[in-house]
Image 1 (cartoon, rainbow, N blue to C red):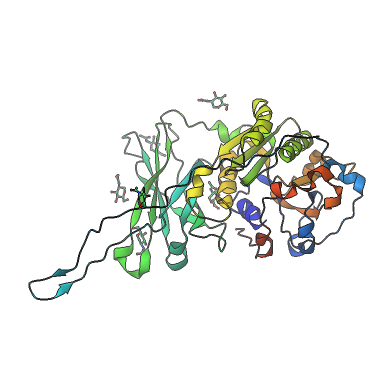
Image 2 (image 1 turned 30 degrees about the vertical axis):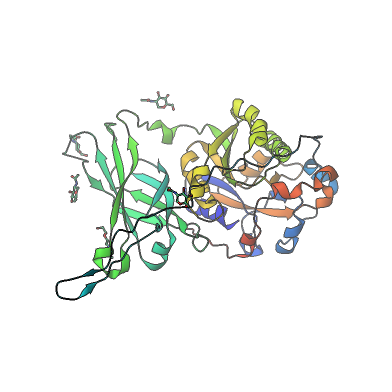
Length: 411
Ligand SMILES: *[C@@H]1O[C@H](CO)[C@@H](O)[C@H](O)[C@H]1NC(C)=O
Ligand SMILES: *[C@@H]1O[C@H](CO)[C@@H](O)[C@H](O)[C@H]1NC(C)=O
Ligand SMILES: *[C@@H]1O[C@H](CO)[C@@H](O)[C@H](O)[C@H]1NC(C)=O
Ligand SMILES: *[C@@H]1O[C@H](CO)[C@@H](O)[C@H](O)[C@H]1NC(C)=O
Ligand SMILES: *[C@@H]1O[C@H](CO)[C@@H](O)[C@H](O)[C@H]1NC(C)=O
Ligand SMILES: *[C@@H]1O[C@H](CO)[C@@H](O)[C@H](O)[C@H]1NC(C)=O
């Protein structure tokens, strides 16, 4: 998926990533292709995907559900949408001026897109931060919004680092071309010197300017408190200590009627594959209904799963439940906690050929900071016939995105 490649692209030389790509095109396959990503029963995808490998049915056994019946799947409980009615009383009327001129009134209704919506702000080192969010897409299409960061320390130790403005603030638009009312923005704020080393605390401000129309009166600036580090909370060991996990999974937005049975199969399979030093972060955009939660709960209690409720972002009309924002947030949020971060979906299964293990594959790639995984569609015939009727329920990925350009935003 273009989105996931982009998530990685926004990232880090320091961090190593394995990137699952659904819409993988031959040209993109230059990196070592040692692992296979199996798409279970996506017969519809066959036409898109070059198949280089043949694997026997027995290799694909794991796809076949061994779980007997799980109760009927209930529809997800979606958050109640914001009211679609906004009622107004007219504010201004036309006016006849003493000069006889008729002054016409203009009354705005509704709301345009917000200038910036923050999801998360994270440190990327001593002097660098990433701010992940959404911004008005028309603004980015027709104007050149600019971003600047400023660090305001709590302490009045004015001598040194009071009121530092970042030298480098650049934005990455990982879903460029895909966004709708909103597009995803990752602002990188890098300062000329370390920030908050004395641990006295402070606030990172983001100045988000619309830079509209070449006419300065439309250049509005919103100043946003992006991140506060309370006094004494900055811990350098975050960057230097051994990561807590070997493998961390960042899932994209889950929505639609997910099958609890499939989710149970997916998580059991991947916990077994990735082992004890692994962790899975799911993002619930309405897909984690009660029965799916039942399935995830034991894994949460065992410390394997973190569930993030991101239903609130449904208010902001972006691309596929704002999945680009979500995976970028996950990347910056967890990058110091894992050696490798994986991006793929819950209808995809990582497959490592016999005689290799996930560890041996990744050890062979230790000189790389990221790589993609070749994908294979899996025949629907291999799946349990009992589930056939339900198949559509867990195929929540829209294949429309496969046809588009997959962009690389590598720097
Ligand atoms: C606005 O008007 C609609 C339709 O008359 C009504 O149902 C709704 O409750 C009103 N909303 C508010 C906030 O007054
Ligand atoms: C911001 O960009 C710089 C230069 O590319 C990079 O070294 C730094 O890690 C980035 N910061 C974050 C938080 O991603
Ligand atoms: C200011 O910075 C200089 C050099 O970085 C350092 O020697 C000095 O102690 C700092 N002063 C204060 C008050 O932190
Ligand atoms: C921070 O510095 C800028 C210019 O460098 C100045 O315009 C601004 O007023 C300062 N803000 C505070 C809160 O000191
Ligand atoms: C808009 O304002 C910001 C902040 O003052 C400034 O950095 C930017 O250059 C301005 N843009 C234009 C087009 O004047
Ligand atoms: C920083 O974090 C490490 C482990 O994450 C911990 O052992 C240490 O005590 C922390 N230091 C401070 C000053 O909180």
